[in-house]
Length: 66
Image (cartoon, rainbow, N blue to C red; front, side, top):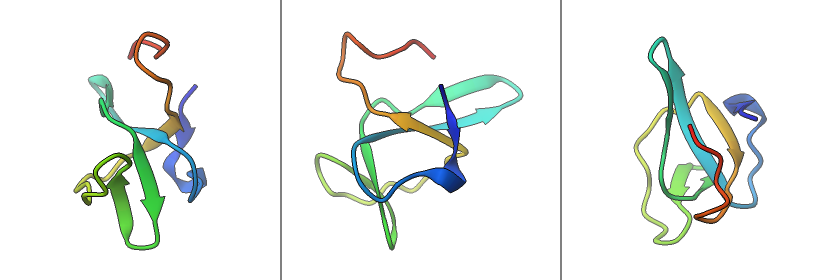
């Protein structure tokens, strides 16, 4: 289940999404929240998105469908 982005923790692997009138648009890679914004959890590269929702990252094969 998606949670509002305001409650996203500063630890763990998260899946981010933008949810709009067309539905859910989840990112396909794990992210981490940092004091300076969102980063790709594997590469550490900043992610330039304005997500609306988050959920725990689940490895491929176990991930819920958008």
